[in-house]
Image (cartoon, rainbow, N blue to C red; front, side, top):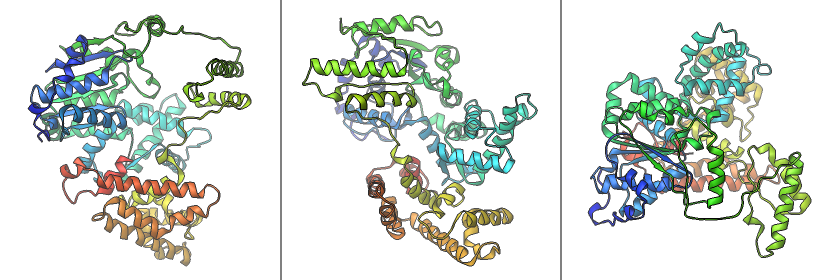
Length: 559
C-alpha cells in the first residue's frame, strides 16, 4: 500500500537534522542486521521512528513492507502518530504493534491451519488460571499441594522455550522432581482443553505463529516477502519464542534492526533471555552495532552513580553514558533499620522539603517501590503524617469484575466453545441457574461430547436438570444465538448497547449497593470505548477475508 501522501512533498529531512552522529548512523543504515545499544534516555524512540521515516522517504520502501514491534500498545500508537506527523500522512499498511498483537493478527488469518477457527478466544491470566484449576481437578492433582499458579508459570516457561506438551511430558513424566511430574500431567490436558474451547492463552500468541511458520512454508514465505524490514524495540526483554519468530521472519533478507539495552534487562523472571541481545552478532552474522551513549534525561551526578553501579556487571556489552547537563543534585543513599524506619524517613524528608518550599505541591513527589507489598508501611506512614497520597496502578479497567462479566457475553457470542465465558455469563445477571445446575449441565455436556452452549440449547433432554433450570438455560442459549447472528452485521458498539439494555445490566449493577453506580459507569465507559472502536479505520477489516471474522473478534483482541 502506498503512503497516503506524496513523500517527496513532506519535510522529512528535518528528522535527520535533530539527530546526533550515533543516532544518525543508526537511522541511515539500510540493509543487513543492525543492533542499536541504546542507553537510558538516549533517544531510542526517536531513532526507531526516524529510521522508519528514512526507509519510506529516502529509500522508497512501501510502508506495508515494514514491521515494527514494540512492547506496549501505547508505544505502538505513539510511534505511528510520530511517523504520521513527520511524513504528513499515515504509513498505510505498516504493521506496528506488540509481539502478542502481531501473533494474534497472524493467527486471525491462519488459525484454521492449526485446528482453531479465526474467531478464537484469547484467555487472559485469570481465565488461563481457572482452566489450570479445572484441569487439576479432572486429573486429581491436588491444588492445595500443587499450586495452580506455580503450574501455570512452569507451563508458561515451557512455552517460552517452545517446548510442546508432548515433549514436556516425555522429559518429565518419570522425573525425580515430583512437581515437574505433576506439570507433565497437567500441561497436555490443559492445552487440549484450550483447543476444545477454541482458545489461546497469551503464550500461544507467540508459540503458535512459530509452529505455523515451521509447518507451513508457503505461509512463512508470504510473510517473509511482505516484511522486508523488521524493527524491534526493547530487545533485551525478548524471550526465546520471540527470538525464533523474528529469526524466521528475517533470516532470509537479514533486514532486522533491534534496539535494546543489556543494562536494562529486568524481566528474566518472566522469561526474557539476555543472550538474545548479548549474542546478536553470532545469531545474525555481519551485524552492524551502534552505541547510543548520549543521555538527554539525567544530570551528570546521576549518570556517574549509575555508571559506577552498572560497571560492576561483567555480563554486558559495555557502554558509558554521558550528558551535557553538568552538576545536578547529589545522589543520596540512606540506610534504615527496617521498612517502618524507611517509610518514616521518606515522610520526614518530604515534609522537610515542603516546609522549605511552601509553594511546592505534594504531587511533585513520587515514591517508587519494588513490590506492591511494600506499599503498606509507606501508606501507614503517610496517613500518620497527614500527607495526601495516591496509589498509582490499581485494578486495571478491563480486569474489573463488571467489565469481565460483560466481556464474557461478547466472548461467548464470538466463540460458542468458550467454556470459561459460558460459566461466567450464565450465572450473571441471575437467571435461576446456580452452581448445582451448572455442574449437572457440565456432566451432560461431557456425556454427549458437546460444548456447554450446545448443551444449554438441549437442556430439556438432561433428566438431571430441573424443568425451570432447563428452561432458563435454553433461554440463555437462545439469547447468545440471537446476538451471534447480529454480530455478523452490527457494529460492536451497537451490539453491546443492545445487549446491555436487553439484560438490564446497568439496573442490575445499580441495585447491588454503594459501589453499584460506579460499576454501572464502568460498563457505560466500556460501551463508549466500543463505539470509539467502531469509528476507527481498522486495517484488519480491509486485509482479512470477508465473512471469516466479525468486528467483534477484533474488538475482543484489542481489549
